[in-house]
Amino acid sequence: MKYKNLTRKDSKQIVECWNRNIGNLFPMTEKLFIQNSLNDYNLDPDASIVIKDGELIVGFIIAKHYQESIDFGIPSHIANIQVLLVDKEYRQQGIGKNLLNKCLDTLSKKGKKEVRLGRDTWHYFPGVPVEYEDTRSWFEKQGFSRGRYIDTDMSRSFSKDEPFEQLQNPDADFSILKPEDQDELCEFMKANFPGRWDYEVNKYFELGGTGRDFVVLRIDGAIQGFCRMNDEVTPFIGCNVNWAGVFDGKVGGIGPLGVNKDVRGNGLGLDVVKAGMNTLRERGIDHIIIDWTGLVDFYKKVGFDVFKQYGTYYKKLT
Image (cartoon, rainbow, N blue to C red; front, side, top):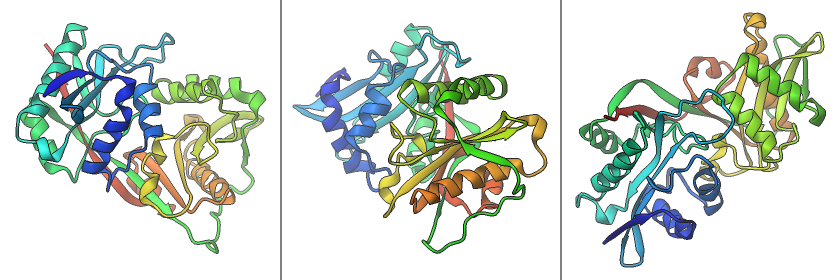
């Protein structure tokens, strides 16, 4: 068997390996893999490795760290393992440990001080799926520490005749973002939600977004809240619809979302969720997913239930 660095030519076999092993719960497409892994500027090709038995890929690890020129406050000393997978027919041979050690050695030589499982830009997972208890135990044996939090994906399915959500503030000004208001939203994000959410909004416009995937709340004419939406018309696959393939029907996503802290406390936060839900339903969506949240009780108020959960893991490098 031979280890080699990941290349674009590997995408088809990697997707096949993925779906043989975890595709029942996390169905992968080549389009999603190319978008979230190969096309991410933050991919580290030196630390992303495949192992082949002859010409067959039987395992792989994909690593990232922030490398883009614009500073959004994403720490450059932290790296992420997007995914580590060994084909079930090739386990218990030390392949996973070898892939991990080769990856960590490369990241350490590049000055990275901490590695997190998932949580990367264009992520698949915010951690290790909780149902994979053996995987979680294996990473702990490799020196990874379990984080304090469990992150959750939530979902809700709708029947065609189900009533739409009623807003607590029916006179609030919710609307779809206009293309000419792109800069205003970016300034709002920079001021109120700096970091990853700010990065994701800027990336949306960089990749051709027009604004139709945002509901915004305006107070006295100014943006004071937002809700990001994803559906099949969005110019790329949003992370909250990564696993749309497990549903029958049209799937949409909500999030991130939030309101200016100065206007919180009167139901506008929940109303911005409802406005996003109603918009997606008007567009014919049957199922809505919210990914990577700790606000389980908050979203249960509007009928969402737990869909998937993930344990957080990290390792300090020396």
